[in-house]
Length: 307
Picture: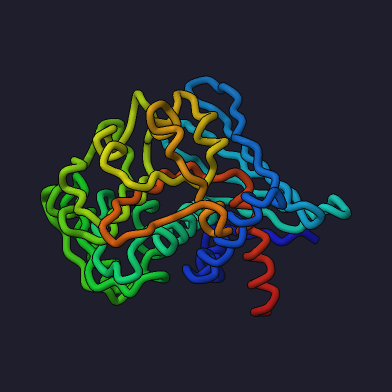
């Protein structure tokens, strides 16, 4: 009988360390060709789209995620996990939590691989679910000393800072100006729905690592090309998906495309990562297809071990 998970069960079982570890393994599997993950597909619907991502961990499982775009970046998601040997459905997850934790976990891997080993301060622009899971995962790979948050809503940024203090035990404060959240931070997270830039590259200090989670296409992006120009390392979780974006992803266009590195390749030791403390690194998250299914598989294994 298939296991069914809703958001409360996902949140109860998947902690940050487990999620980051699963995404680390998945990225290497994708780079080595053991995780087959083609770019996402979409079907137009009246006023939105139905989006489908699929993955196959060779010889073990296959599955897919589907969601719509009616009035929100990602609607309620459906993730289905099949046993590759029998075709039987092993598990189904419904809701937003699995996808959010997947994105956060990928960001956590990026921080662990690309940020300086001594990185301890984090600035975040955004105060929604995606911003939270990025900070949640970053705290699992670096001993954060302070989090500074900016968003357009004073109430939301104050609540976000309070949650960081309460749930992560990390000192946190909200600021009115986005530049004040970014300047001098070791790690910067951009997790907004803004179609126009929310930070200036001039505010990103040497040695800073940036996770960019929101829009990043040439006609709508939460950062400008000035950030790509100052970046010493440009990295993504899926070069194939970055190149397949419609409209195109900024970092996959000339003159940046030739500089875009594969995070899985860096993890596998086949692609160079950070080499000096003063390099600026930027991770452009695409949401590599198959990762939600990979995380659902990890969820079933952790749940089974915990009884």
